[in-house]
Amino acid sequence: MALVKILVANLFAGASFQKLEAGKVYDVDDAVAENWIAAGKAEATKEKGETLLFEVATPSTPLAVETTVLQEQLDNALAMVEQLKAEATVKDVAHAEALAAETKRADVAEAALAEATKKAK
Image (cartoon, rainbow, N blue to C red; front, side):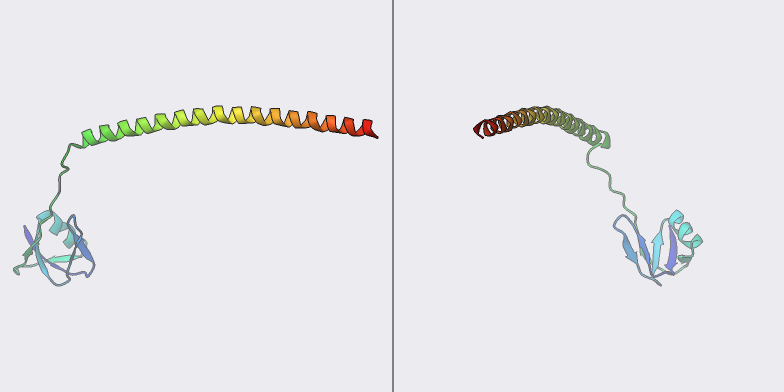
């Protein structure tokens, strides 16, 4: 552990992004201290300071299990999307055929009306 005095006003540390105060002394890991000193964000000091611990949270369940479950859910959702697309295509074809039949029926009815109108004159 190394004691460092923070020189910059905008420095955050840790998993929770704790804001560090400029001018305050912190006791941090040697590797972190070296990085901050090299970047000009801190300077080494012998003053007593506050210990700054970097906590790393571990997942409660193995990541592989979560990934497998999520991948299975994604695969099921994609299969459902493909099924719905296929059903929509079938319905679109049926609607197109019905529209064509109605258009043909309307054309025949218009032709018959025109023929009847001619005969009536």
